[in-house]
Amino acid sequence: MQATENKEKVVYWGTGRRKSAVARVRLVPGSGEIIVNKKPGNIYFNRIPDYLQAIKGPLETLGLENDYDILVNAHGGGLTGQADAVKLGVARALCELAPENRPPLKAEGYLTRDPRAKERKKYGLHKARKAPQYSKR
Image (cartoon, rainbow, N blue to C red; front, side):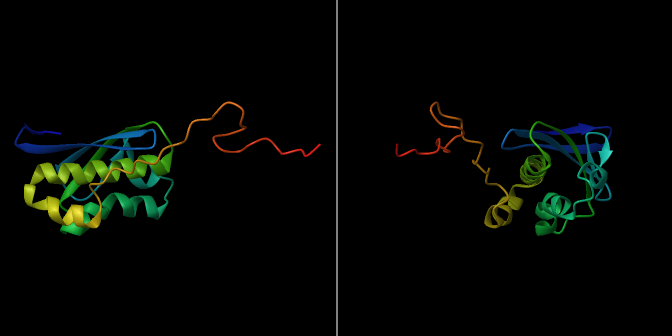
């Protein structure tokens, strides 16, 4: 997570993770456009508004939704995991932008990494917790 200056444009970086998804997020001054893996955000996330709302959440908390473009490189997991990973990456990049952004983002829960992940399968069971059917005789 670092800010780099490139041709008078300042770029703020943030990395987000959720389940097995990883998103490397760049915030660039712009018009509020979301680009994920070189595709527009609404196309990448299949026009599901919940995912786009989640991604814009940290920016809306600070009132910056139309001030920065979000450029994302996401891999691993599914759309839900990637959307939440992008949300965390955006929040972390906003903390890089200005340290005073941290308290409102933390209060809204945007800086907390969700630790839930798929539980491993155990031997003797069908899935992580699903046991074989019990037979009395």
